[in-house]
Length: 387
Image 1: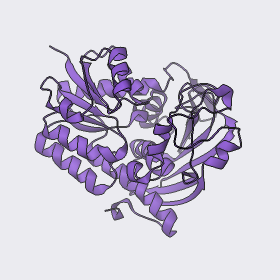
Image 2 (image 1 turned 180 degrees about the horizontal axis):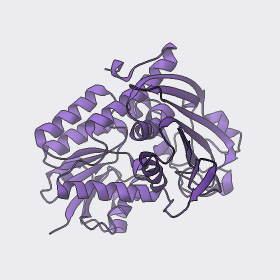
Image 3 (image 1 turned 180 degrees about the vertical axis):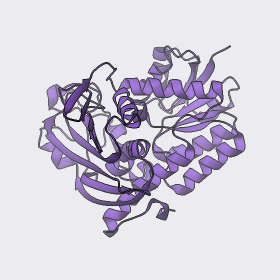
């Protein structure tokens, strides 16, 4: 049969990883790209071999050859583009977080129901091979009855890797465009989704969040900071990073969230620290994540995700006095995007629902917002309180 024709709406930094999902995809091809940055758009179209390039997403949605779209835009644009795509009869894969609030989530869910088209939220960590292996081990009973999960995140600096344009930083620290919470909402969407996938539904959340200006942290490592320009090249790290930080940009780190799972005495923790004195070797962003699963008979550790901070096997298991190391898997973070997008297109072809459903994406958003509300009000918050 003919391959599905996919349209990418938004061709910024992270879209380069999405594009990898269509290079050798047996069921789909990248047919069209869309972005308001015409120069970047044309460069991406040539680079990826797209047949069509649009500067208005409505033009892309009006193209009858487009079967499905990926929405890879700032968060405040998700609901408008997503609903329009579903009403235009396109299948939709939405970058996390699903939307800005519960009302927008409900609008996307209802639009998908009315259209009969597939809608899913892309949580790429769910397809990351070391985490997939950890899930397989956990479900097989390898460490006994699951008891808890601990997620640790570190943000640092690097000498090489992605260059970050001013525009990419700017919208993420603009609450009207990002929804607020670079860590607990944007980043947290990844790991609350993982926490649910591995151990189940969350009953209640408690958190502590420190909000502090990001500018002094960057200045400490000699980065030149200038507002109002398109790009700012940092002096640190061999001059390979492009950063900018007005005084009002706040990072919600350090932060800790704890939660209890439903119908069980199982608990989870999510901790993030930011220190630009820590060097994080990475071909992507200078962040890395570790996951520890505790069971009644032992432990499973996933020692890396985005980067390669720890020089250890990607998955380590301890059970009954024996430590087993697993290295027979892909560990590049980009592999999770490829697997996730193959699952999206295969789901369309086979008529099955890939992860995450709209309903699951909504719950992830509620947990993120519950953590933010908990820190603000100093109390336990149940996700269903977020309306």
